[in-house]
Image (tube, rainbow, N blue to C red; front, side, top):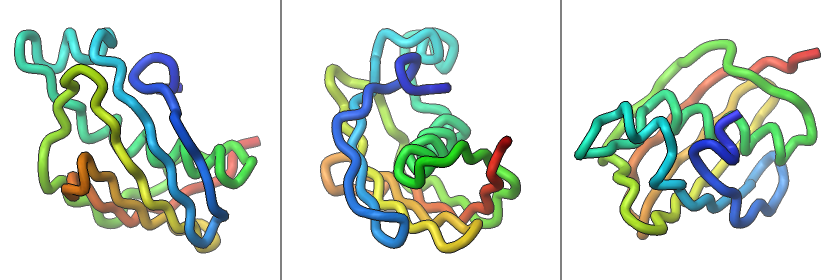
Length: 118
């Protein structure tokens, strides 16, 4: 789980068809000490992981990544002070469409397939 390790959830609202979430990055995370020392950048896999965790919270089910269909990283997400990342989430069956933005600037968009874990 990245929540508590990489980010803290600020808000989660909506439903599976149109959910919204905001998180604040924990700039003292161990992840940033390794990626990259002196110039931390949020790893793409962590951006996807946050979207999956937020979709799980929104749906009330334990979901995990089954397939990465289309992921585009547009702008790097740097942890500077209290960086807030806003997610728009739309889950249709197993398909999650999500975007991540900082300060209104699009950073990532993805269409991924999720599966429910037992």
